[in-house]
Image: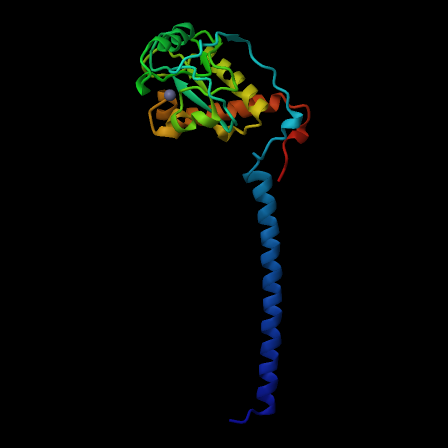
Length: 236
Ligand SMILES: [Zn+2]
């Protein structure tokens, strides 16, 4: 079929219109994308990575009661790298830091068996008192597959529910902030024993995920308080 001249002109006009519409659509889409990106980074994702060179968190008061080297609780295995901190609860209501530390120490007299292998870098008492049991460059037997690349903290608790006292909680936040600063860890690298094995530890913070998120946020706030300059938050 031979196209008339008029028909040809009509097709050309449509093509030009379609091209113009395509260009306008692309322009509008890229504009929308730019606006979306701005809004997302400015308002939706305000929490971005921290610049640890600008953060200084002083260490909380820590009492060193390092365990005697032994196969069960202080095997003197080198902790090559620290990629996280694992929070635990003692699962022994009402007991204090000293008693739990002595329990770890007593493992040295037991048989060299898996069920006797238990320890932790730190224990925080009901009164917020922090005891260190294992040097930070050695592995503790607390967090199963993550023993090899994490620091562990056991927290005492007054009752079966496993919620930490205000004093234990405050010391935990300070200790976590200091460890995060030391090893340049973000708050999502603070994990529960539960996140490693599915074990209900620390119980209250497994049953109440919102309380766990608040705890992580409190560490971040504590880190930001130790910041020299607002620039420590990299907007990216
Ligand atoms: Zn645990």
